[in-house]
Length: 188
Image (cartoon, rainbow, N blue to C red; front, side):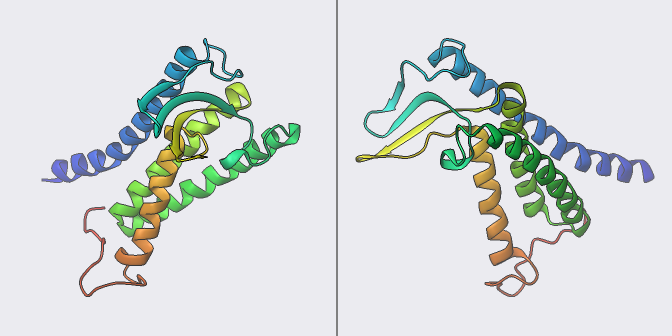
């Protein structure tokens, strides 16, 4: 019987790691594909073509971002150093928060943190390798062009939304908690 418990704990420890590795690999593979397909393999060049998925709404269009969200601090030499240092501290904080969440047994929040960490690592790999982040997903809403983003950005957004849902609805002290609605688990 003891072996079953050990295997179960091992599986519960490996599943988040496998998910994290999958998220990072998928992010890097999609970025590499669109760099080759749309920017002739040159990371720091703007793509010369775009792939139309839904005319007038959804495109794959490669660009690179030397800043953060919405090109914040783009093209500032010190910006890349700032973002690299900030990312290291953020990853350390995320790791400790993940350990806390894991000890508390919050499954939903644990998955949220995997998405946030996976997205952070995905963009950090780009910053370390190329001093920029490769973006390729483009949406147009009428005359408004939403900033181009990548899968790592999607992961971080999904993770933050899950984090908000947790603290609004699922946490034992949630803002909008209904009786008996909690994500605490007994096997975490």
